[in-house]
Length: 107
Image (cartoon, rainbow, N blue to C red; front, side, top):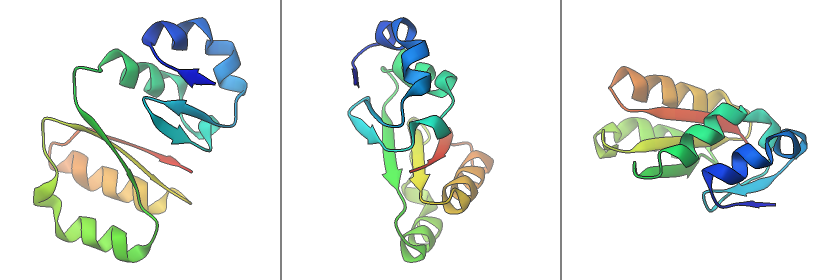
């Protein structure tokens, strides 16, 4: 299923909540059930705010992001994913402490 608008999210809310995977905002999300529908609605609703999807695939990548926090921009929303949620949730907590809006999930 491809979701192209905020209206699509609202219209197909019940169906989306049953899906395992989908493309949201051009990002393929494999474990859709791990993401609250409210987060997806938020991301679609605020398209005027640039958002960036980051998938952390290794501990090296994780530590690289931690060492380069200055590269994260405060006027963007970051959507961070990893395979177990530990690295993505940790990075999100650190970004939020630095005034950066961030959401995390498991994929």
